[in-house]
Picture 1 (tube, rainbow, N blue to C red):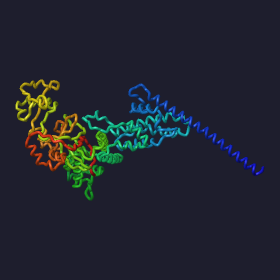
Picture 2: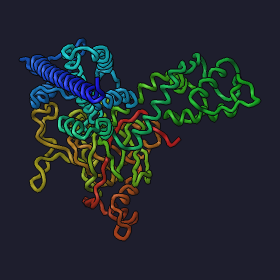
Picture 3: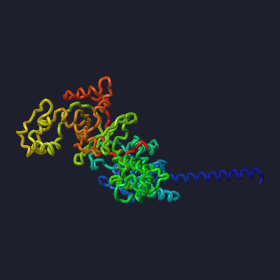
Picture 4: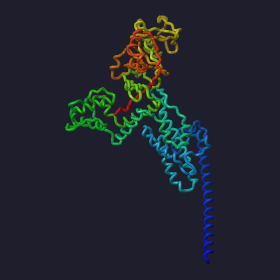
Length: 542
C-alpha cells in the first residue's frame, strides 16, 4: 500500500476512534448527569418524607439519634425545597470536615461531642466511603442521614456555645444573666455562604480571660485524670508540721501530683517539714480555705476530692460563663458570690477588690448582669415584702418600741402620697401577702440596714450593692448573712471609682454628705457593668 494511502487510513481510523471516544464520554456524562439528578431527587424526597411529619415539634430520628432542633431543621429544609446542603452530585463538600473538627473541639469547651451526633456522623462518613465507588443511587440513604445529622449538629452546637447547654431557668439558683442572643438559622446560612463554619462557631464562645483560663485548666486536669488521678490520704487526726508517717508520704505525693512544690531535697519523705507546710498553705489559699498549714477536716476533704470531680467542676463553671455576656467589656465589676469577693476590672487589670457579704441559704443572692446607674448617699431602706412578712412583723409584735428604736416607720402610698400608718391600728397577727397594704421604711442614719451608701442597678430582683452597719461580718470567713443584696466592704472607694471626678468628689466630700443624713442621689455618668456570678473555679495568674 502506498505510503500516502497508509497515512490516510490511520488518520481516518484515529478520527473514528476519537469520535467513538467523544460519543462514549457524552453518553457517560449524560448517564452521570441523569444519575446525579436522580440522586438529588431521591435525597429531596427522602428529606421531605422524614421532615413533613405532623408532630409539633416533629420527632425525627436518624438511627438511634434524635434530631434535637427538629423544628428549626424542618424550617431550614422547607426553605430550600429539601435540597441537601452538605453534598453535591454524590460528593461531600469541604464544610463537612470543618464541622466534624468543630464537633471534636467541643470537648475543649467542657462539652460532649456525642451530643452533636459525633459517633453517628463518623459511622455514616465511613459508610459513604464504602459506597462511593458504586452506583450513585446507593448513596441516597447515607447522604440523607448525613445532611440531617450535620445540620442538627451545627444548630445545637452553635446554641450551646452561644447560650449554654443547660437552660438557666432550670438551675437551682435564680439566674438572669443576659447571655448572647443568636439567630442560629441566619448564622448557618452565612457560614455556608462564606465557607467559614469553624470560624463562625468559634466566634460564639466567651472571649474573656476567665473562660480561656478555665479551658487551659480543663486540659491540665484531663491529663491528670488520664494518668490515674492522684492518691487519697487516709482519714485520721489532723496533719501538721513535725508529724511523721505514711500519711505524710501520701500527702506529699498528692501535692506534687497537682503541681505544688514540697521540695523534699534531703528531707525524709515521711516528715511534715516546713516546705510541706508552705505547700499546704498554698493549697488552702487556692481552694478558698483558711491558710493554717494544718491538714484538718476541710483541707483533707479538699485534698481527697478527685481530679475527675475537679474536672467536672471546671466544666460546670465554663457552662456558667456561657450563660453570661460573652464580652465583658474593657470596664466591669464581677461579684463572685461563691468566694465573697467583688473585683473591678479596667483595661484587663484588677484595679479594686473588696470583701462582700451575700445572701443566706434561705435568701440566696440571685445571679444576673446589670449596670450601676446611681449612687445614693444616705438612702432610705424599704424592706422587701418577704422580709417584712417573715421577720420584721414578728420583731414589731415582740417589741412595741422596735420601730422607734430603729428609726423605722410603717407607710402607705409612695412619693408625695406616702403617709405614716399607726401600728396600733393594724391587726399584725392576720397580715399576709394577699392583704398587705403597707410597707416598712427606715430613715437614713447609722442604724440604716443599707448603711450610708447604696448603688442602684436595675434588675427584677430589686438587688443592689450597699454599705452596712454590720462591719464585723467582713471578718468572717464564710459571709452569708444578707437577704440577697450584696454588702460591700469599701463603699467610699467604690463610689470614687464610679464617679471618676477627683476635682468634684473625694473621700472627704462623701463623708461630709454622709454626716448630713439627707438622702442624695448622684447619677453615674459612665454606668459600670456588673456581673453577679457564682464561680466555684477560677483561673489564677499562675
